[in-house]
Length: 315
Figure 1 (spheres, rainbow, N blue to C red):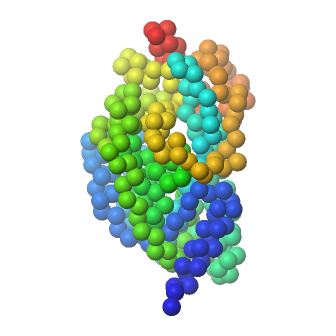
Figure 2: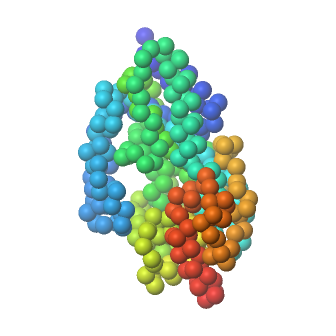
Figure 3: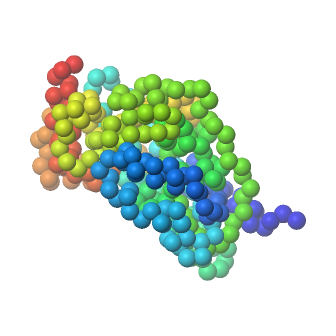
């Protein structure tokens, strides 16, 4: 006799698709020693740079049940933001994810809608926790375990038919839902496009990133002023970097469209370093309120703009 929770999984997946999720999967919270070992190695090798928050709450990463007592199922959800963006070679660049509304808010709202549906479907008390990026959860590991994606050589999760331009979020619930979907195989094959094209050599080997050389880390996460080397490394990137995604074949073969909640802020598409350097606190808020850039703040954005200005003069 079929497990009745398998039917729940099928029904939940249909509702997730209606809400605009690209993929959704279900995992039992079993130990993930290989993922934890890789994470700890990254910390030990200081490849996380100055993101000291990654050094904390390690027990919760290893045991997600600490985030929700009596945890039975981790629901991994992916949602596409792959809007087409025309870029001009040599011009200042902002990463795709920063040209739209802040994904933390959008994904959390979508997961709340899915949770409300799940509670109504089950018709019983359900304890749950919604996590989006900032919680100590091994997002890619659980997504892989659920069978919805596979981490590529650029360390980003590849969702078949959606590519890597996706946001991840999770529902942790205290009800078991069975969905016997096997893990995906290696989706990269012999391709090394991402490693070959990384402008700073941050991808030191397949699946291994040195954040201290990553343009996204330097322009988004690093809080202090740049060293001269770091300033030169960011090139023409005002905020973030999509290079390893732009060259990924999986992003050229997508059939899943971006969620319509992620509409582009067109006033950011051709913004110049000069414009950024003239922003006041007030005009910064007006221009960037609700976007991921707002979280980084005006001080760091101007730091980036100063470096890009110098770098463009050298080209």
